[in-house]
Amino acid sequence: MDDKKIRQLKTIAIYSVAGIGSATGLFFLGRHFIKKARANISEKRSLEEGDPATFAKQLKMAFDNDNYFGWGTNWKVVQSVFEAIPSKAMYSKVQREYMNIYGKSLNADLEDELSSEEYNELIRILNAKA
Image 1: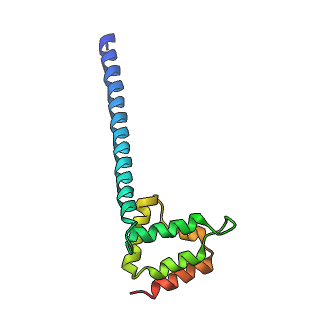
Image 2 (image 1 turned 180 degrees about the vertical axis):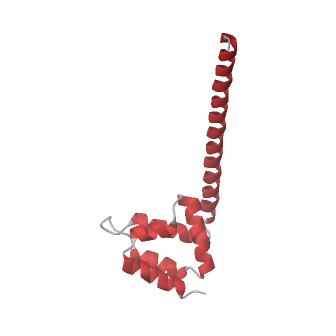
């Protein structure tokens, strides 16, 4: 192969890699904006009483606001939110909204934040619903 063909192949390879890198970057940038838009929509709905986004936000606030001394989850608030969720179907919607808003699994956060006794109590409350 002569020098000119080698340079052409190198140029093609460089532009191909740059194109693939740009396309990948655009994909991830677009995905970021879509997730952000979904979170914003959920945030706006969280002001409505009885909306799944409202329950999701209340649970996150109970995890984050902790108690008077600043550590531990506010168990009473978590329990009252679970009692206020009207059905298992609504709980599924709450899980989806929690993921949309915070990008985390509600069940994983519940397991992290609560003792096994408290978590089992929430499961009993949820199982008692239709």
